[in-house]
Every structure is written in structure tokens, then in C-alpha cells.
Length: 497
Ligand code: GLN
Image (cartoon, rainbow, N blue to C red; front, top):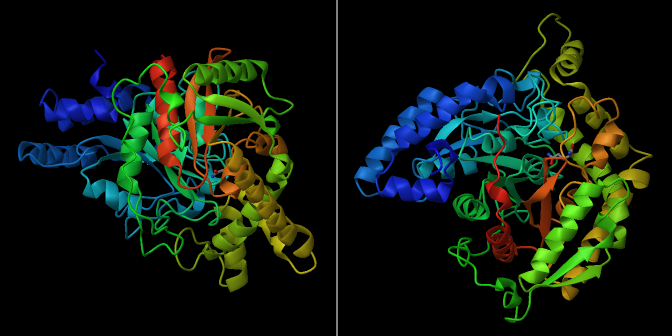
């Protein structure tokens, strides 16, 4: 039997309900695991042990009283980009090193309302800018599968904590791949929901038209459970969707039949999977390619039809993202002026100098680079050539997806063209780091849902497969992922630290 800290949400839930374990015991075992491995993994910026035990005690009392939903009493790590009332929220930046929010993000409020136990705040790339968690102003996080390698990013703390068994699940944020890519590199499940499905209220903004919060979990069932908990309209986020609430766990429990995908298509027919040529890029690792090919065969074996499709505008995605995201970031980060909140340079009585020094000392090099790129792209004389062009490319990329989704129900791609790489390998060349996002960025550009699930190993390191669907197709993606997971069991492989 799995040791308590290795329980999934749904396993923990059952054992809590049967009183085979208490939330305090479960929480203690996570905190012990943190004690054992955290000095090597470094997935947390802040550990809130006392608070967690107190919340666990309250959760146990609810269980005694026959109350509490699916997440009651289950320990979670939350990426340090989501505001937690009374708990330091740093965004892994010197700028917010001592910032203690006076309110909870909507997702945090929702989880706490459902009895979640907060273990602490997850490490990340500063302001979520990066793909390796090496841009954290404090320390890098390490990949539990190989401590000399990166966990991916920017939600590296989230993925590493779940892979290492420190947290039962985590919340990350995904602007260009930051939930899916680290999930892929750490061998866990990560989902970026449809834009607007999860409230961004209290999520510290990076690029608002892309940002979306998503679950990092040990399996697809847990992903659905967390999605149930965090979705829903929020009047405090102007881009929050108003559609009816869905039960994402419907149809994904129990054993799947022998060919579950033969009836999962929209009209009860075969599920049609598209494999876009453009996502099997030059520079992709051979082992990743082979693993993906095997996954495609498995999907066919499960009853899906598979066809090659083309999304020709994919080649503009990287450039489009790296114009629009920095542009939005340059506007969003203008608020850090040393006056309202956060770090403030005090050694002068000159206002402009104070502001300049605050930003110079408060932001790390990648954040400065993005602000400068964005300011440049938005400035008079360059706006038309860069920002406007990128917005036009964004429309074309969206239209490509719309067209292809008339032909197929979902797309299957790699999540990342490479497995986890050694720390320091790509820090000297920002463009090389940006290139890792080729397969995940288009999904944010078009506001679509994307699910990354473990699909095998290359060089002994986890490989992730990405399933992309039309807007609000989360139920179908989760069923597809569930069928695959039940047939293969890759998600059950655990790293030894
Ligand atoms: N790696 C991408 C970037 O640096 C995506 C980050 C994210 O999704 N937050 O912008």
C-alpha cells in the first residue's frame, strides 16, 4: 500500500472518510517528507506547517461531524504568485520579498472554503517569467527525478513538490506553458484550463490575456477534482466566463472498458485525434519523439482514430507570444514603483531616482529584459511593426485551431520537445530557453485548454503528452487522458530521491 504521503486526492479522500487516516496524520506525513527532501528539492518558498496542522485539525472535526467535500483535509502547495491573506506572497521576486497580502485570491478562497490544508507557497520563476525555475530570485528548484536537472517552469515548485511526494497536489499558473511544461518534466499531470474558466482575481498579473491558473496533480482523476473546486464565475475578474458549472469528474471514474475511445466522439462515434506536423519540431529529442509515437499507437488501440493535421501558423506562435506577453508585462509591472507596496529604495530624497533604483534592485535580469522588450514593442513608431503585427498573428493562430477542430476532436502533441535539462544549461541564452515553449504557447495564444500527462521516459526522465481541445472541451480532454492513463499507468512511476 502507498505510504500516506503518496496518496492521491481521491485515495486520501476515501481513507479519510473511512477514518483509516486523519487529516492531521496525512498533513504530518507531508511535513515529514518536506523535512526529509526539501533541502535537496527546494520546491517551497514558504512552508506554513503550523497553519497546515491547525487546518488539518479543523478538517478532522468536519469529518467527525459528517461534513466536508472532496478536498477537505487534503494538503496542497500553492504557487507563490497567488495571494494568500496573511501569508507572504513573493512571486519569487525581491520586489515582493516581504509582501503580505490583505486578501486571498479567489482560487485560494475556494480551496480554503472546501477545507484544503495549505502546506505553503511554491517556488517559481520570478513573476512567472521562465521555463526552468532558475529565474527565482531566491534559489532554483531541482527535479526530483534527477537533482542536477531543472523541474521546468515557471511552476517548478508545484510540479516538483507533487512529484517528490511533499504535497498531494498543487496549484500553478500557466501563461505560456508554466503548468504543463513542469508537469511534463516532473512526470505529473498538469492542466491549463480554457481562458476565463478559473478566476484570475488575486493572481499576480504577468500577461493578463494569457494567464490562467491550473491544477498540478498525480493523476487525471485528481485533476478533475481540483478543476471542480476552482472553476466558476467570479464577478471580481472581468474576463471570468459565465457558463454553467460542469462536473469534470463525470465519466472518468472506475475501469475503462477495452476500447473507451471508440464511442467518445461527439456523436457517439470514434474519438478523432489530430497529430499536428508542426509540433514535431526540429531539435526535438529522439526519445521524446519515439515516446510520443508509442502514445499515439496506444490511443489508436483504445479506439480513437488518428490523423495527421496541419496548423501552419504555429511558426509564428513563439514570436507572437514573446511580443505580446512582454508588452502586457511591461504595463502590469509598472505598478511596482516603490510607493504603493513591495520593495522601496530609501537612500535618496529624489522621487525619480527612488523609483529607478527600486525597479533596478527589485527586479531580476529576465524581468527587466521582458519589461524593456515590451516597452519597446509598444512604443510609438514600433507599435505597428511589432505589437499590432503580433495581434494579427494571434488571430491567424486562433483561426487555424478553429479550422482544425472542425476536422478532429482534439490534438495530441508533445508538451515539451526535450526532457528535463541540467541546471545552468540554458541560462546564458534566453532565446534557447524561450524555444522550449514552442508546443505550449499556441494554446495560451488561442485561449484553449491543454492537458499534459505522463506518457513514458527518455534517458530515464519523464516525457509528457499534451492534449489540446476547443474552448471548454475540458470534460473530453480529461476522459481521453483518463482512458490513456488507465491503459498505461505511466503516472504511477515515482522518482527516488
Ligand atoms: N516560459 C514562458 C515565459 O517565460 C511561459 C511562462 C508561463 O507560462 N508563466 O513566459
